[in-house]
Image 1 (cartoon, rainbow over the protein chains, first blue to last red):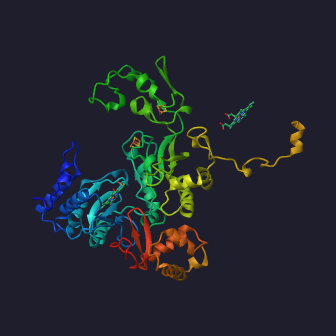
Image 2 (tube, chains in turn cyan, brown):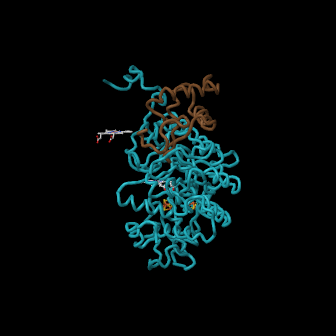
Image 3 (cartoon, rainbow over the protein chains, first blue to last red):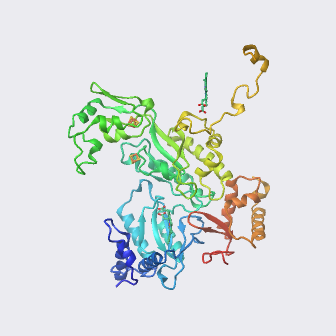
Length: 442
Length: 85
Ligand code: HEM
Ligand code: HEM
Ligand code: SF4
Ligand code: SF4
């Protein structure tokens, strides 16, 4: 028998999708049985009380969680998110229910013994409930008490060589796609860069420094598997400068519907009958800039007009490959809709080389110029994207020392924020009227 | 760096004096509020000094999860309050 009746939550189990309610009930039962004989440091019925208070919140139509608090581990201003409930008498198991953010490894590669150790630790000192991974990218350990925090931190850092991630007004845990470790589309080594940035900016990650949160996300190519363009204040997206590499023989194999050359590498096979591959309809016609042609069995791409959207490469990976002169673009200012609505990143730097040999100097320079500006000018709780809206993209170009260029304009006549200043124009605003009148009558 | 910020004790005293003056009306502050105490210094230097005061146990963080604030250790609103003291 469950500790609390949960008719409203039970309904959430009836849909076609996996239900977190079923998962929580499973975990509640597992703790109650405790077949492994764990010496729980959290109340054994923490998960049942979690279900109970959630049911109550649904019933009342209001939350019974308080917001925030003074919890953390020594020396760190982030990584622990304090949560307390306001019904501790009825739900003592969740009186304190803090979350710990654990810095996920680059590319989210784990060994099974690491995962086992982590789960053992969390069964022992927490609720046992995890979220792999939060939208931040971190391993999320949900629900523990204040007393356990230092113990968990000690085990993580000393026994598991594992750091906490970011929260609050800190740099958030940088997060990346798996990049060149597995993916042929990757234009740079995302894992190496995310590791470098995480180490380089340890102070910003662990001690609050900013007006609000700040996120780096790294995608190896414009497929944007971690959606950096929508979810990070600074998004690093792999790209290339030269031409898409074309294997004309392979193009024709696709056109001939050779079974060894399935469209999208066979990703949609079996979902429904898509009919024979149609190059015109599925590739040329969907190229957003209409820069592709196929004539006399030859494919032609007008690379100057290609926006590197990846579509053609995704459909015909055996025929088309990213270029060889690779690097990354930096986009800035994406955010979720708390103020002013959601915003996607705006392109700031079209191309930078990715160079570990000089400690990614070109990249850290842009980062630090932006931070100096935002720390000085950003209002409390103002995201970078909002500051850019408030002071203008032109101001951002000024503080980063980047010249305006056509790539900054998404559509002509819709970005009226790039103006000439007097000192940028030869001769300034003053002119010699006598000289002018020599050529022009009144 | 200004002489005031450079002198650890003087800087900490200035922060505490400012916080105590405000204590009647407010107990938690954004990092930006401390910029006023050191008008001639860069935010990056100021945050180092203020974060050090947390490490030294003089100040403490308060975090909503998304935003972090600073206050005198043990002073003012703790987690159990919704602003009613
Ligand atoms: C009306 C109530 C709430 C709203 C609208 C809300 C909204 C959000 C949103 C939008 C996020 C970001 C999601 C993500 O990054 O994955 C978030 C994250 C989070 N919330 Fe809430 N929340 C609510 C209640 C709660 C409660 C009751 C708790 C804990 C008891 C909580 C703890 C957290 C934590 C720990 C995170 C970070 C999780 C992560 O990084 O994956 N929230 N919340
Ligand atoms: C290099 C030469 C020129 C440049 C860069 C130029 C630029 C512009 C610009 C930026 C506008 C404002 C558009 C808008 O706000 O919608 C404009 C409007 C206009 N221009 Fe030009 N222009 C040029 C030559 C000319 C010439 C030679 C004529 C006529 C002989 C002309 C006639 C007009 C007119 C009538 C408008 C107003 C259109 C409207 O209000 O819809 N322009 N021009
Ligand atoms: S973003 Fe690009 S490089 Fe990274 S995993 Fe996805 S497809 Fe591969
Ligand atoms: S990458 Fe996109 S824009 Fe470029 S040629 Fe292919 S489909 Fe067209």
